[in-house]
Amino acid sequence: MGRSYYIEDTVEKYFSKIIQLQKPYVTGLIIGQCCVQRDYVILAAQTPQKENSEEPPKKPILSKLDEIDDEWVSVHASQVGRMLPGGLLVLGVFLVTSPDLSKDSQNALRKLIFTVEKSSMKNRLWTSDDNDVSERVAVHICSATRKITCRTFDVKDPKSTAKPADWKYQNSALSWLTIDCNVCVDVTIPLISSSPSYKEQQKSTRTGLAKWAKELDDIIILLNGQVKDKSSDLLEDQKKARSVAHSSSQMIKASIVKPSLLGNNTRSTAVVQTCKSSLTIQGIVKCRAYIQSTKAKVNEAFQALKRDILNTIADRCEILFEDIILNGPQNESEKTTTPLPQRVFVPIHGSSVMLCDYVFGDESAEDLQNRFAEILDQDVRFDGIHFAEEKGSVIKADENQDPDVSCHLDPLKESQLKALNKNVTSSKLQQNLGIVMAAAAAIVAVLLSFQYLLE
Image (cartoon, rainbow, N blue to C red; front, side, top):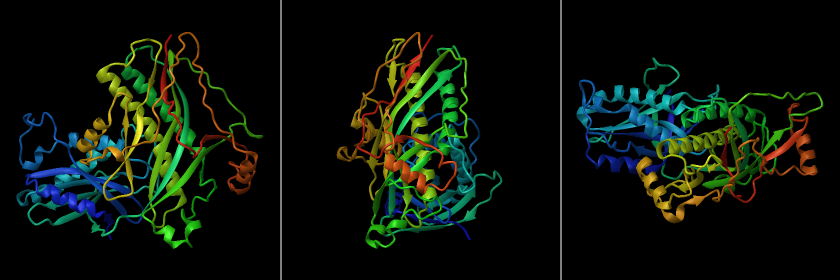
């Protein structure tokens, strides 16, 4: 039996709009959440028009679908991936064709599936685990008959063949749980190369962030101030309150707690590394994950939130370096602190889920609107834009000494610490609970910044 896909009715209307364009073919991405039992689709977005689309093909064209630029589709998938909070991903691709091109659609879709997946894995700070579903969906729609053919491919197997899948539109909006969290980040990355090239710094940053990502393996996540067993139901406390459990959207506040590295039976080892300069990423960021509320488990929420923490830091760094490489540094001074882009959340039509984007201080809401229109084919209203992090940065760099890296962390109250030690079942976590890296409180000013310390 194949996988089942449950789709928001707004996606059906979107496909109808694309069919009315009467183009020979249209490619695009399927966006939603992948679960063990079934997948949920909240959005479809057609591939933007390429500016140099008139370039002659480099190889002979045997079919009209051979003109599809799979690399351009993968670039689109990378851009879309940055706009998805935790729990959401690119589930696959769609292809709308005229009837005469239908016979070639499966080969084209198969090629797109694997190219998009390869692009999505690039620069990812987390790795898939055994519980992750590796099947991705390929949807073909005939523009004349409107017939939908839905198949899946196992992206872990290069020789994977198509499997049939069910495509089911929903009359009502899907129900989602929102996990919200503020996370304090304080990472110093050594830059070994003496090259002033930003591409070299970008490479070192990726390596440094990959090491930092491993530190998140040991964190404790509190949900509404409580420690929960990973295998328990996420809505276990609300099972009796059916009116709450069936609401279209619920908010869960999460807090991140990091166990102390110095326990009674542990030793601390200092690592000394020679470097030419260092880079510091520091501040408090807004993280968010969405979980489909049907039979949601606690471990699913933990995984989605952890991945959002990693994604939002990595994406901001990549966006900053891309901006510097294309436009040059904002400040030509050797002593400079460059702010990372600010996270912004935007609602999408027909769903309680909000997508995100990143904006620099000199960008306007109109720039954000244009980007959503181009990448996600979504109209964004000015009053719907939610700036999750206030604009602001701290400018500080010292030329001849180590940077003064500091970040205020709220310690756990004694009563909270005792409660944690009582409830946490893992012996490792019972040793010494340390610093709260993030508090689910009012959104604070973003101090997120890059500090470049040059010799």
